Amino acid sequence: MDFSRFKQTKTQRGFTYAYYFSSASSGKPTLLLAHGFPTPAYLWRKQIAFLEPLGFGIIAPDLLGYAGTDKPTDPKAYVGSGLVQDVVDILDKEGIEKVVAIGHDWGVQIVSRLINYHPERLLAAAVLAIGYFPPLAVGTDPTAALKEKLGFDAFAYQRFFVEPGAHLLIEKNFDSFFSLIFPLPQSETQPENIWCEHMCVDGKAKAWVEANRTTELVSYLSHEDKEYVKKTLLEGGMQGPLAWYKVFLSGDGAANDAKISKEASLISKPFLFLAFEDDAICRPEVGIATHAAYVHPDWKNSLTTKVLGGDHWALNSNPGKVNEALLEWIEGLGL
Image (cartoon, rainbow, N blue to C red; front, side, top):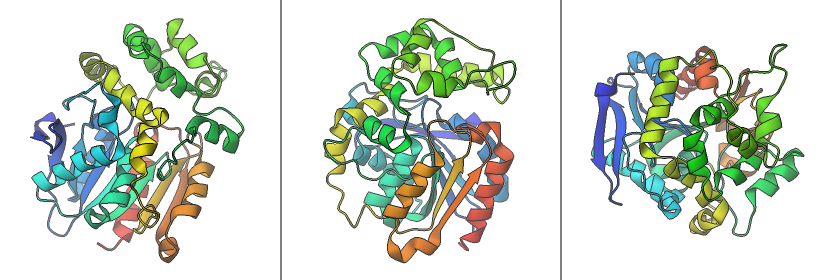
């Protein structure tokens, strides 16, 4: 990743953002790449290396709480309307009127709130691993709702992430946390399904980190990759990245989402859902059901769903298939 391409700007909310930027070639759209937890824009390095030489413009922010961007510790700074306004401010800074927005993990919230608040800035939208984030209803417990849908406690780990002091434990035993977030795949020599057994069972994620369990590094990340992510997270602290979960589970996110109208909650743009069959937490069937309910009836034919082999981190572990799927969809938009 060419770090010399990073720029900075201050948003209307007063936050300084770092973002990767390269201009589009004539006739090519700009792609907005929104990362999730716990990696900064660096997550997209393999997609940028593939798409940028084809002439696509790239804007890939370090989102709030990450790397070169400010890291407020008040969870209310991370409400959806504020986060998406920050991103729009970056687009305005670069004079980019419309983008193809692509999000992974928590970056899907950014894409979703662009759909809700700023659809005029979108040519199309794509979400990877996680389906569209509809406005959260006030009083909803999202961890319980997902458990009821799936039959297992897929978001159990989030209850650990929002505990007081969780950031300190993670910072102290960071290598253990990293092994849990980027788990070795189940195999003859590694019989555990780490996410199913330790992320999706109440109390087990905390127990893993408290015990300081570590594994060898997954094959798709180099030592340098890990050290970059580790450095950026420990220098800034984990409170910012974990605040995304706190606002989600506290009810502040739902209160903020209440301003989104029913009409604005519908997807009315060409839309791609790229899911991964081996993702133990973000199951494809959840996103598929959400899109059936939230894609505007007039736009049903503009919904594309693909389920690829690979786990949650397929952007890094299976980049060839991810890149090919993104390119095929973007070229098929006829922009």
